[in-house]
Image 1 (cartoon, rainbow, N blue to C red):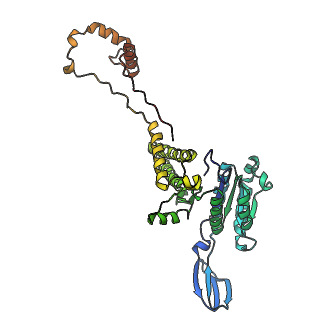
Image 2 (cartoon, one colour):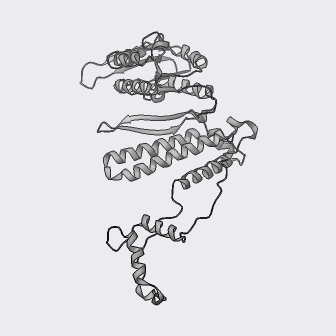
Image 3 (spheres, rainbow, N blue to C red):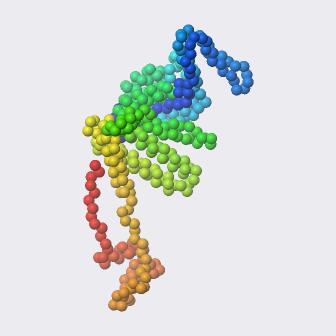
Length: 375
């Protein structure tokens, strides 16, 4: 997340695509002793089983761990990653540990193939491959950790396996000054091929603060990443609803207006030096004070978008209320009315009515109000 006027860790955008399926996170494991471990693969088509691995355990205490990396969706991941990089105008890199973890070679090969066949020309035209030697570059995960510290100008994107993605995004959060300035969302497809998304704050950012809050301690949590997750979820839901039912456009527009105004209110609160302590130091706002300030500013911005008074509804008064009309020169009154009844329909539009009252010097004037500063 970047806020104009505030200096953060990276000067330009940094994107990260994490293959968030399989790997260590879906591992099966067991504590075992001495013996033999055999990992068998039994094909679904009934063909002969394959021994994937066989090893002898000589220690009395061992932990056997089995996991796999499902690769069917890497092509979808590649397309999504390269499209995002093009849209954000950043240079893409692929990160693996394939020099040691030989099974990760397929991840790099698939990403490179999709890039060469579909995106390389577009990246060349945009001048986005100059920093990477004119081609898609592979980075060993060890090297990626060092580059994340060096490349503070930003302007790059990385794609990696599940575990590497977990660790490297945490590092990006720290380099960028605060985990609160990182957004995260899971991407998938429904049965109809539509993109579905689950938004979240950068994980692991609030646990300690939540425990402090439960203990009654004062906290100063930067909620920007969490609110961006809520904004992303609301926008995505509104877009999906509108795509499925065009009659919901009014709801779609209201949601997107609200979320964009909320983002502006949060960003401006930081710009005015009213941020949480990760940004403003010891004098920064507590969690509650920051939320109150954003809420005040949001309400102020939303109220400015709405007319304070609705236009009046003009109706002819009931004849029973025409007391005092006996002394009125009705013929002259009709002549004055006809000046503004341009269509001859016996009705006067609001604009002509307003002109008439102004000319007569009886148009109501609104009280002058001075708007206070936005701080």
